[in-house]
Image 1 (tube, rainbow, N blue to C red):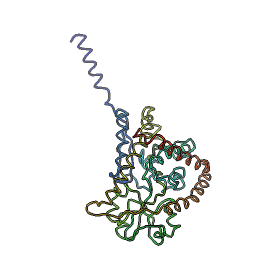
Image 2 (image 1 turned 180 degrees about the vertical axis):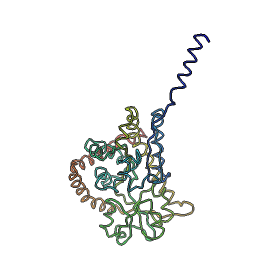
Image 3 (image 1 turned 30 degrees about the vertical axis):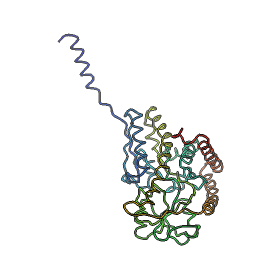
Image 4 (image 1 turned 120 degrees about the horizontal axis):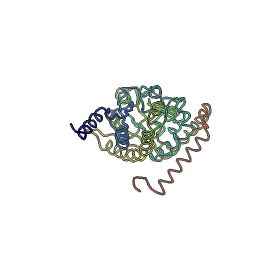
Length: 351
């Protein structure tokens, strides 16, 4: 064998000895099912991370609470049961107090505005430090948009109709339902279908496209639009140790996709919410539900009813070392900032 052939053979043998390229795979725990707008958005996130990293970073989504249930998500991600996961702030009022601010009933019903404000709030220095103490890092926010009520039997047409009803409510919204005379029932949104079906609850606090995805329309008779704030205190978090193991380029991809996710999800949520309302009103598989809107005066009363809870949040945040009043003021300013940007420039996907 001449020298040229020997060199060629050596090159082949050397190449075959190099181990195959292995991507970094992050496990992602999701308590919800693999359907609906939030599930599709989560898949988009994973696909974009894969694409933008050139296959170097992948996310393996485990659906339906197979890794952990919603009420165990924070500790499960923090301890590494999963590398990443969806955490709903209201299940952890003390530990996730920083995030729960974005769930309070501020006067905003725009999902994109809420998502932008929530993202900036959670990326602030004080919040990042607070999460790091729990071995967590924020990636990006979801929104389930504005709060609605799905009811079986008598509909809620005014605030007076809430009194005496058995309502599945969470967070401050649920507490205010209780203040208005409702009998609160502690229940995950994923179990609300069964609760409505068997009469354990009369109504469930819900969100337009999410309630459709969970098929609540199959066991409810009406949907009431409350025009009362939006819900953005659920999002993607990553275990801080898992984040530290990523390369700088992988972290950059995760950050960039997290930021772009806000525009992607904001557009999709608004489109899907409108489609969900139309579909449920027109009838799905032959079953229609009645759609009601709370009178504007009642919606204003609900917003006013939330102010004491916002003030209480500020006090509670201060107790854990956060600047409560300052964070509230900053969050209001962010809502104003992005509302103005929308009014002046339109939504990003129309520019």
